[in-house]
Image 1 (cartoon, rainbow, N blue to C red):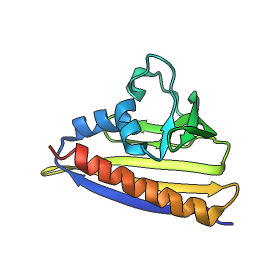
Image 2 (image 1 turned 90 degrees about the vertical axis):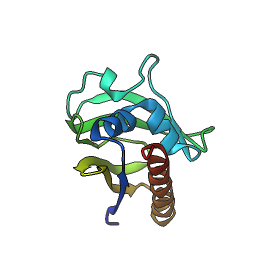
Image 3 (image 1 turned 180 degrees about the vertical axis):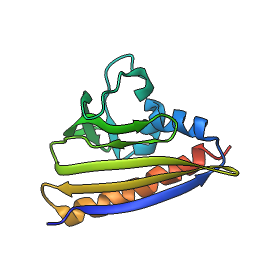
Image 4 (image 1 turned 45 degrees about the vertical axis):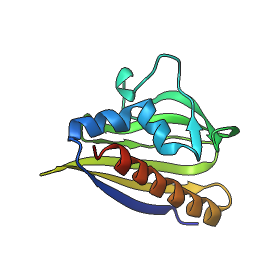
Length: 151
């Protein structure tokens, strides 16, 4: 089966700096994922900015919970590229995906910025169901972004 990919974008009025702080904070990530997923992080980490990032090297192993309570997966959180303030590419090995790649960009605009996501993945099983669900999750993420980054 071919990898699945899709893109979404949200125009927000927050500055690129504030958008960066949101998308890299565990609070922001948690709000975007809830109620569909919850991911764990080591104690004391509040943002990926707290970590020493070596592109392509896993930052930590996160447990993934479906509907925030059912343990279903793990992710070796790995950033293959980071441009502070402008975006990242997360390409993390997981138990459920042959391929997981999430590219998130912040593009400045006259009135704030555009947050762009491009997701490419290849589930190990149930590809049509997983593709449908991931589109729902990312549409939800962008609704949350829109609500939280348009003061």
